[in-house]
Amino acid sequence: MRHPDLPWRVIGCGLVLLNVLLYSEVSTAQLTVKPSSISFGSVPVGSSATQLLVLGNSGGSNLTVSQAAMTGLGFSLSGLPLTLAAGQSLSFSVTFAPKSSGSVSGSLSLASSTPILHGTNGKHNGSNSTTTTVLLSGTGTILSPPSTTPGQLVANPSSLSFSSVQVSNTKTLSEAVTNIGGSSVTVSQATVAGTGFSITGLNLPLTLAVGQSVTFTATFAPQSGGSASGSISIGSNASNSTMTIFLAGSGTAQGQLAVTPASTDFGSVTVGTSKTQGGTLSASGSSVSVSSATVTSAEFSLSGITFPLTIAVGQSVPFTLMFTPQTSGSASAIGSFTSNASNSPAQTLTGTGAAPPQHSVDLSWNETSTVVGYNVYRAGQSGGPYTKINSPLDASTTYTDSSVQAGQNYYYVTTAVDSSGAESGYSNQIQASVPSP
Image (cartoon, rainbow, N blue to C red; front, side, top):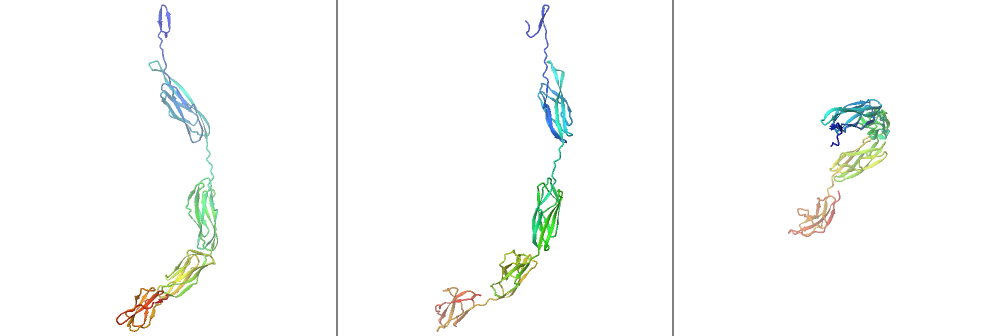
């Protein structure tokens, strides 16, 4: 019989079997590259762009990438040589850094090799070498610097008018400076011209970003009457390097304050009581602001005015003066007013404290025979209770009560006492009203 898989032939009289060696080649490695081409698009000159390149081994044996040949100005790759095991893949960065503007084309040629194994003994019998090419492209561009509008300052309001301000007074207005340009502005100085004008709240140097503002105050304090003008000059690196804000105002003369009467005499006033007299304050020339009043003696006082107050030119304000002596004798004081008037009027106040009168109640009654004396009783209300106020027994039919107080009502009765000491009942009640004071 013959083996169905072996060739045979008849030579002469016999059958000859030829043994043929079968050989097989081990699966070789295969380099894969993704992507097959790379486009970097537009890249600014002086910068770079990077894209990934994935190298893989799709075969059954190791694969060595021995070198990479790069063409085209500005393209680069690093990380070679390398060996990829069967089924392995690695990522690499391909960079494009244009040196000049314009389109650039190039290529990346990757040389790889893999050994060839023959037979069953696994001995090397050579190697396969291949070259894989990746096309590269990109464009270098030159970016123009962004154009910006230089910074510019504007003032709001563009000028300040203080109108009329009285000499020795002040008036303050607010001012804002804004950067409306396309870049920041540094304000380095601010100067003020004109008598009586000043600024506060502007701390220099300062930088204003686009759209940013700074607010400060301007003050007018006239030193004399008449019109005044001035300016604020703002120095900066803005397109309008010196910005001017014009100032105007008018100083008015100080008003005159008059107090009427210039002196007041209250005459004689009983100690413990009070007497009032009137006075007026008036303004001339200009309005006057009065902030307070002072009287140098506690026995005199001023009322009827609430401070501070402003008296318009040509107008008067009434007030009340009071004298309340605490002791007997002459008293005096000076009344003065604090104001923004050019003068400081004062008022002289005088008066005399008089001792209060000594009041008494004189009592008398009809004589009763066969008695040796009488007792006198007093009450603070009608009908008593009564208190005896005489000591010793009064032998006469009269009595003076010197212990009464001004402005009070008193009620009196008497009794008769005989030689044995017996006392009669109360007499009829009488009332006495003590005047005040």
